[in-house]
Length: 151
Image (cartoon, rainbow, N blue to C red; front, side, top):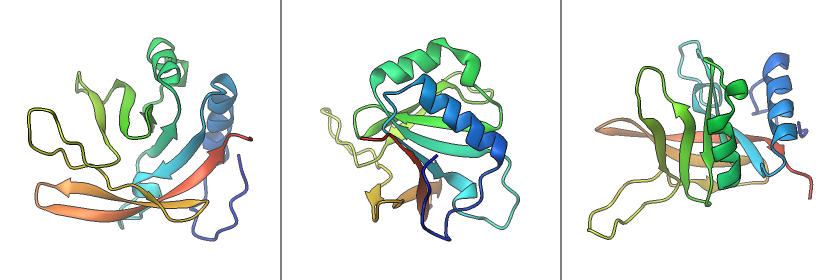
């Protein structure tokens, strides 16, 4: 994992770091991995899982869908395959559908708007995004880069 020169990055447990190293080694097309969710944005309640946003290729998403060896009940992966659309490789919890969304607003051809996360990288190691916590409340959140493929 890359060394991030910021005191804002929450500590990552060694078993999670090991998981991320193995994931990046098994999928060299992964460009970067970002810590998101409640561990990057403390809510006052103890977090129960780890949430990561992965910038990669459609091949990485397809590979993860077919290979469940990286599936963990306490780790949620969202894979960005085109710089905007993200999707979880596996059905989420007891829901049969894949968790998905957009980093930016999406305008379908049939009209309307799908609100995205408004993802904005603010430094080499940090990004900001808007998460919908309910139908009436959006919250500005932080994300921290924990891995970047060496160029």
